[in-house]
Image 1: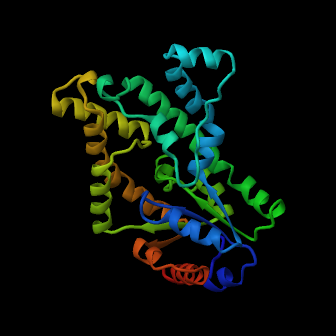
Image 2 (image 1 turned 120 degrees about the vertical axis):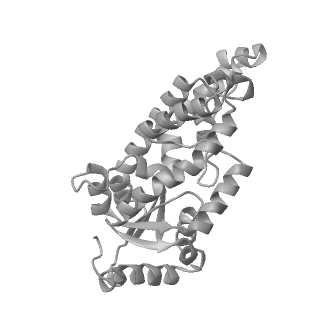
Length: 285
């Protein structure tokens, strides 16, 4: 690991960490807390995807809808108006909206082929954004003078790596740059995440093989065609299965770093608290 002992972690003049785990367990919360302390640079993978790698896809999709309105079409063609997405660290809705949900077009669904095409765009964008980590570590320190660095990843990072392969290029690159920190939830956290998602289902990114298997299974179990699928019903049904699918993958990734719990994260109120929690995790086999 980048910091093999608790003492090495505490004494490091420059610290770099990468948070991974299920969305909703505190990755962005603790990232914001550390950033607000003044010494940490916060690199949000989802923000990078939405602004650098999918920004044109998102705005072109909005423009495509606007072009259906004759009034807006004329203004766009004459360059009289500008359309853009207002993505922030705490508002990634434009990315989710673009990813969409498959199923009945009358209920806001996308054709499955288009849905998977956008999934592929996101996958490429996320891998590229993760590979940009080294550049942003250098940028944070050499341009802005931040001594410490946080890489705040999305929940789908585990879909694009093989943590059981010691030669996995992305795992090797990231673990060489940052201390890999798994924020682990328990069964109660998982149930709460499922309840929260059920109240407000949102698009997600999935490993292609997993997504295809879930799509075929859903169509079979519900005896329906693609255009009969309720988009929200499908992603609700898939979400709980995705959490179960991802858990062992996160656990395997954690062997490249350390594990802390969502409850520990909830108790972090300062940079000193965070330093102690990580030191304890490094000392724990």
